[in-house]
Image (cartoon, rainbow, N blue to C red; front, side, top):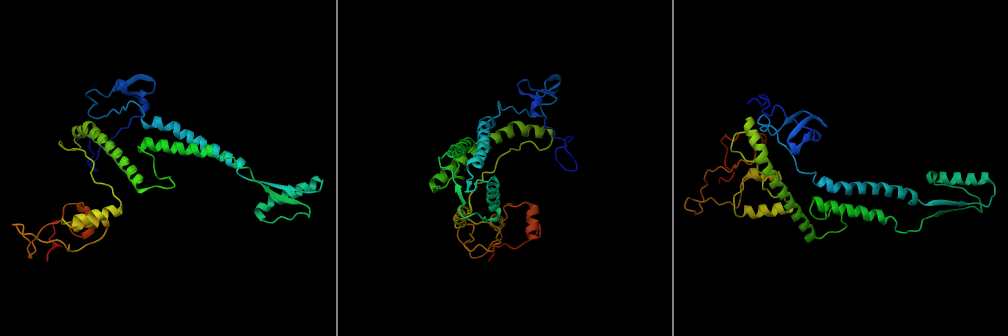
Length: 306
């Protein structure tokens, strides 16, 4: 296998060509952007078994979300400037003295009072705080930011996200989760097709993997702890579950399964324990050895044996 590193067993060389040097419509890669020669045709026999041409026809969600993200970025910057200008109240000092020196002294004392928390004025001097009249002008910024968040969530997740909502209901949250999982399922099927049609044949041609393998995502359902516990309660009442599976899922080292009844060949329960292997290869050999201190080939007692 000339393309495989004998020490690591991985691909010896992986080249990533910059997008600006790729002309997907011509199936051509140029050495310098804007200069036609030298170039290489990736669909030719010399390269088609080693390179995958990525041409999505556009930049996908990036083109749809970029204007929204930029609008939000500028809106937040303007909102910060607005809050600095109109959000801070003005401290107003009034003195009966006509002297500029007395007025400056009072202004300095008011300015220092923000840190020292103490200000001393004359008997007839006044200090008050002038707050701006609330005109709801800031809602222009907050409403635009909320609008961008909703639109980006609709584009990426398929529905409005409940992460930033002030309140949510069980039904609506579950609906969002279902929509998100369906979109993930579509993405997985698309990636599986690309891997099996474009990448896997090239890995076989390089000798990295044997022929006949197929790339497929695990169909394991992502659940929270509460749903996972309910599922295992349902399964353990009807089926035998290996101790390895329980320990891997919950990190709990369990012993004999109490509700497991050994069955004879005729399907009748028997009080005599039979020797069986409950290891379903959930863990790899390395994980098994680290956890139990012995290999799978070692003779160990069945935890269901009575």
